[in-house]
Every structure is written in structure tokens, then in C-alpha cells.
Length: 130
Image 1 (spheres, rainbow, N blue to C red):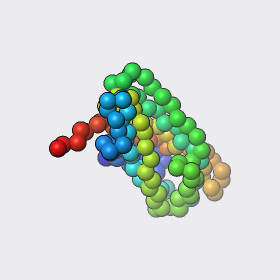
Image 2 (cartoon, rainbow, N blue to C red):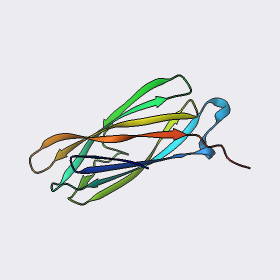
Image 3 (tube, rainbow, N blue to C red):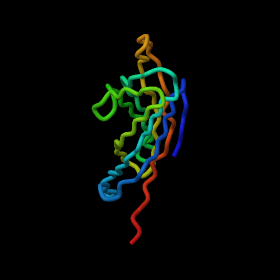
């Protein structure tokens, strides 16, 4: 698990290879990742947007970007000391890659918008042992 703290917001990420959903013969490698967000600031905040940078290391060495509103269809509000956790996924063409990004938050007391870093994490396929 990797962790980053920005402006009192702690973001931790852990990734998992999804062997049952992957098809290495077709260059389809599926990963899930769990994100935990903890608001250690003194303000109530709302997650507005996400922006991911995805590097598919072994397939083509290409970067992809994914951005949009909220996370998994939600824009959670976190009170001081509040926590939020979600699970999402990523597909790669190769057996190894990495992701990182930023969340855009709003401080509800004054409407101020700020960014929180999402730490870089690796996605590595681990073949099923028979």
C-alpha cells in the first residue's frame, strides 16, 4: 500500500491483480485497486473530480489519462476525521503498469477548490499457481 498526504487529506492505494478476469493470451490484464481517503483537516470537503495517469509499461509503453466527475459515480463529502473508501479497476495490455493522479476537492466552508495527490502505485500480474 502507498500513501500520500496533501493539505491534510491522506490518500492510500492498494492494487490487486484479477487473475479470474484477465486473459493473458489476448493481452488483457485486469487489476482492481482500493482507495482510502481520510480527511485530517479541520474543514468539511467534497470530492469533485479525479484525473488519473495510467502507464501500460510492457504493452506499448503508452500513457493514458482518465478524468471525470467524482469516483465510482459518487462525490463524497468528508467531515473532519471522516473517511471514504472505494474499489475500482483498470485494464492493461501488458502484465505490468502503474497509475497516479489527483483529486479535485472543494472546501465547503468557503468554496475553495484544491488538489490532492494520488500516490503512484504499481500493478503487476501474478500468475495463478496450480
